Amino acid sequence: MHDDLHFKVVRTEGHDEIVARTNNLLVGRAAFETARRLYPHERVDYRDGARIIARSEPEKPSRKLATPLRRRAMAASDHGPDTSVREIFRGDVIA
Image (tube, rainbow, N blue to C red; front, top):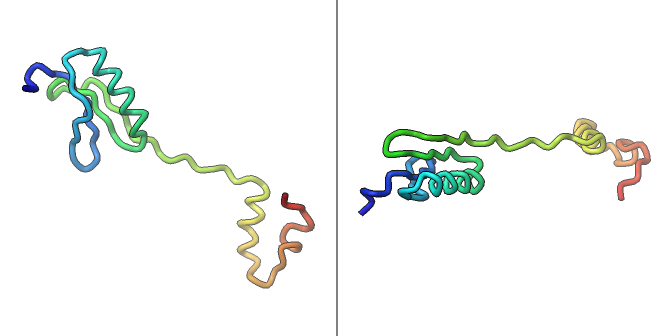
């Protein structure tokens, strides 16, 4: 049944999961690009039989940059529970 479908897109997460199969190189490439966008934190392979044509590496989650206000709030935890908010933020207004 799948003998004529040489190209496949495989999602690898502990085990191989076939996401798409086709006999057309361009359709397979489109399926690979779509799978990369759908599963950015997982490895996705585009294969022709056992040969790997393309591989996507998992993206690392981005870290949010700390804003000056957030830095002061994080530093506030170092002051202890008795420090008032006004002392920590020195009168800054938080909208």
